[in-house]
Amino acid sequence: MMKTPSDSFIPPTVVSEDVNVCDPPRSAGRTPTACELCLFLADYCAHLLGCGATCLRLEKNLNRIAATYGHKVEITIMPRHIHLSIIGHDAEAVTSIASVKGCISFNINTLLSQLSWEIADGKIDFDSARDKMRYIVSHDPRNKWIELLLVAVANASFCRLFGGDPAAMAVVGLATMAGYYLKMLMLSYDIDLRVTVIVCAFVSTVLAATDVLFSLGHTPLIAIGSSVLYLVPGIPFLNSFSDMLNRHYICAFSRFVDAVVLTCCLSFGLCAGMMLMNVGMF
Image 1 (cartoon, rainbow, N blue to C red):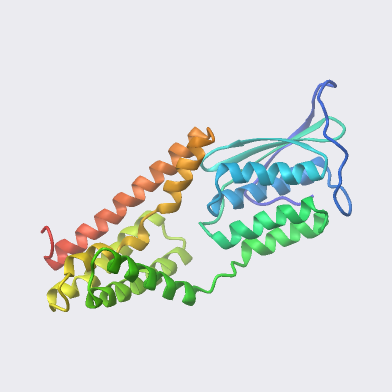
Image 2: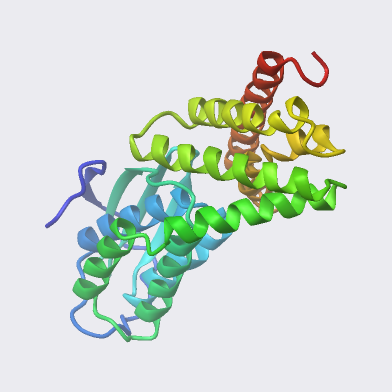
């Protein structure tokens, strides 16, 4: 039996005989034990929630996989932990607790969801699914250089949308590239996200302030305001609203608070940069 370092395993207990077991398994290959499936699903959910999935998606994927192997599953989703229980065919109950892992990634989110459908359709056996999940979470297929370019173009487009002139768009694009590269670098060293947001917002603001200092265009303040938009925590805000609609109030409140804290960090970095460069409101 394999365990992940962050998982804690509670020994199985026998439930009463009146528990309704699920239908027989319909998966390809061997059927995993309740213990194996519990550890796999706990790790799966920890990565899926960490990469930005909503609680609703997590529940659907989890139930899809568990039903494939003929098990009943109960889950408690907390902001930083997953508490999951599996009821086996012989009324054996197994519980596992896993810490939420990873950072927001649409690629990993999509690939993990596709894996749940492959398991449900019988296209992959349990051992192969476990190996594939480990590969997915350790090999993000994103090209960081293309991502860096696209983020810069998107932020420059926001500048134009808010009325920025070509000079402001160019400054915002360069400031975004510098800030976003710094963000990727700091996160690769596991630096706290809040500190990362403050530093990146500060750097982007200082670079965008060159539009004011050198009179490069006619909309310098729009350039400064647009230079930090790539740091806005839109996904946590949207996920908190989705979780609230689906009555996951604890996760919804937690994600909303995280988003508010990151927004405050962004504002602090922006104000510090403007104060240093003596532009704008200061």
